[in-house]
Length: 312
Image 1 (cartoon, rainbow, N blue to C red):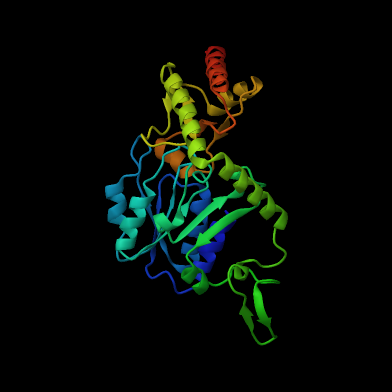
Image 2 (image 1 turned 30 degrees about the vertical axis):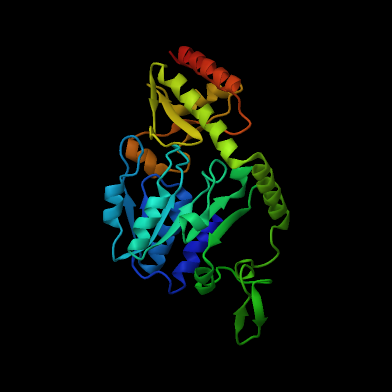
């Protein structure tokens, strides 16, 4: 969240964005909506929303129509935190760049599951949260192309981000210090580094393959269960399964699963516009990680069957 806020503020105070429209998708997390709304109010930008279909897949033809001569930036999630939909970010970047439009990728839900190569993607900016990849909370990454970061205004002032200060004027430090006002979260940075080392040693490709097997296995088991409605059925998906049990509020389902030792998340998942798109109050979301097992998936399915029986 802080990385997107930093980016939105700094871009708004610079001369980098040429158009007056920012394109996001209908599946975005609030962290990739609210900062751009704040920028729009402050600087007169207009948000354009790329629609999705009933399976939670981005409508690429509609997206391409939205990106034009008035577009300043495309800001889009690599993977939906609610549905697990994997967006074709390489194609999105290619479409935008052919029209001279900058692209920011929210990789918070993909960085722990997929190999993400910013050079190969050629994205202009990329952000992610450290805790999504087993690091401490409150630490994250904002990647940007060097020439763009040099042209951006710092969003906070203080120690370390300065080169020279007088009462008449201040000049700013070189990258990355220009964006690091005050005492940095060095404890968090050490923790983030350790998490990156851990994932790198394990291997992201191996992690992704294993997690995909878990997700596919769980999805197939749930499909055979009567009364389960999936929210998001994209062919390319990752990490999570969101669903509802017909006639029952997700909070009730989640509470009973919790009593059985199953940790799921319920609610709108910081994606209220997406819930409005499907006309629902929220979902039950099961998340899968490298430390989960097939046996745990089996226990989850059996527990969910018990929940259905209890709710009637």
